[in-house]
Image (cartoon, rainbow, N blue to C red; front, side):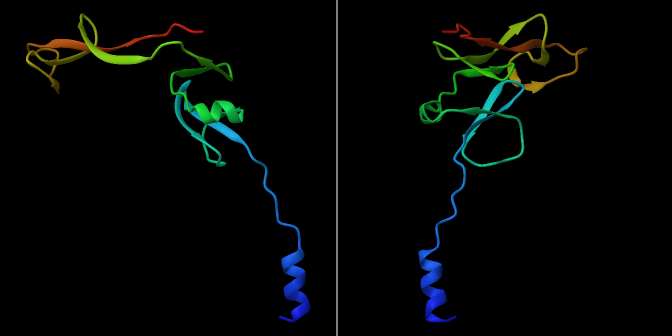
Length: 112
């Protein structure tokens, strides 16, 4: 490398890459925010939304919907759901054995 080639490299303009902000999701449920071009389903968002990093959102028809209160999911006993041992929800049993059915309930979907 000659001295002139060295100075030419230093004076060359830097390569600029586009800056984009994305919210990756799975069927409307947010997975993560990223500035990388990754495989998967995503929507483009602005810098302010990216900075807030709010997980109390859902994606519907390509638009982000923010919720005013936390979204909470928990197991609740009921007549439908997965049959579990009567005294231990972590043990799944066959439907013909004594059991209590549990299903996931989600609360807090009041939108702004």
